[in-house]
Picture (tube, helix red, strand yellow):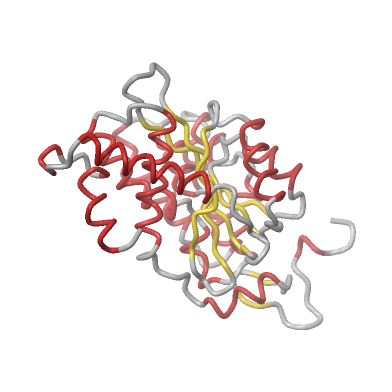
Length: 301
């Protein structure tokens, strides 16, 4: 959008009934946005390299339908540290088949495998990415994991356990994180086995970030780039009680994210991204010196 077009569109996006736009003007703007969305979702990606991607299924209401919209969202980080929305698609309950459709389309349009994919462990995305880009490494979202663990504990214990879980999330070394996890298990296994089981689900993929630059950890431990970006979309749907159709919901999300994308901060230490892309090894966030190997790269493992 140009500055003038965006100023005209903003009241519609924000659901401002006092904007003074005629029904004809709103119809014209909506039609223009849908055309832009269709052009955007079929654009070539052969000229871009995405080192990290964040994925999530974002749900919001559709006013004229019973089912909520599950928008499958992919955001990528390029070699220069800039973040870009790659996909916003309608997905049926975040199923593996829905994610396969999204990823196959990205690959068909020229996108290569990311070095790392970050998302919630419950997503059908993981089976899909292993089929489309088996070489991509996986990082489970710590924020989703902590929320899942706390949900299985009584409210009176949640403040102290949240502190312990944050100690793991922000640990400076893998060994320190693993030690904190073991202390948690010893303290809560007897009375709250479901909480401990939730914490220890797929541990290697929860700790993948230790094999990447420490300066990137705050970016890659969680799906925050998507969560924070969609805060505006969710606000808009609350104001307007939901989009009128699934197509309108996707179009609205696209326009809001396209506008927000211009203000997103680059990743810290973007000069390290080419090293990640080149496959340089990192251990506990530091580049591995020549002659050293990460434990997971030793022969026989």
